[in-house]
Amino acid sequence: MNIPVVFNSSSFNVYQERRNGITLKDAITDEIMENKKLVIECKNLFLKLLSFLSNKKFEFSNTYVLANFTKPNEFEWLSKSWYENIILNPVQQNILKASIVEVLEDGKIIHRTIISENGIIIMFPYHKEESIRNEIYNLCNQTNHFIILIICYAFQQKNGRHKNTF
Image (tube, rainbow, N blue to C red; front, side, top):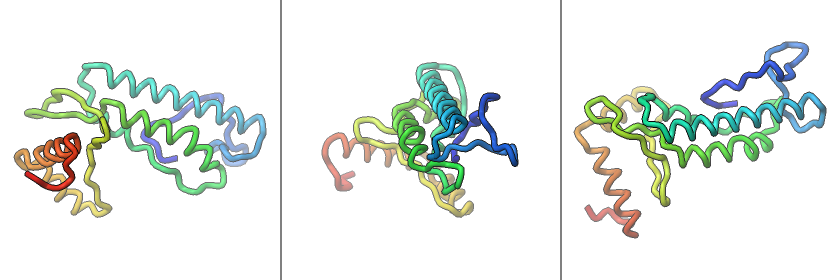
C-alpha cells in the first residue's frame, strides 16, 4: 500500500509462510476479515491524527507529507477495490479538508491551510525527474512569483473568471 504511515498491530494475521505481510484480498476468512477490520481502525486513527493536526497551533513541520496516500499497485494479497473504496477514498476526502499545508514566512510556520476549499485546490507541482523537480522548487521559491499566481488563480476561480486577466 502506498501510504505515509505504518499500520501496525500485534493482532494482524500475517502470512504464515513468509511472515512479512497481511492478506486483504476478497476471500472471506476469519483472518482476512480481522485484518480488514484492523486496517479500518488504523484508517480511523489516521483521520483522528489529521483532525488533531488541523486543529492545533503546535509547530509541527512537514505535515503535508501525510497527503501522500496513492492508489495501490496490483498485489495478489490486496483487494484493490476494497482498499480504494474503504480506505483510500475516505482518507483522500479528509486530506483535502485538513489544514496540513504549511505557510511559511521568514522560515517559520505562520499558519496552515487546507488543500481544497470551495472548489479551489492548491496544486503541488511535480515531475518524475529530480533535476526538473529541483528547478520547479527553485522557481517556486523566487520572490513571491508562485504565491502571486496562486492568489490570482484563487481570485479568478472565486469570481467566476477563467481567463488570465491579470
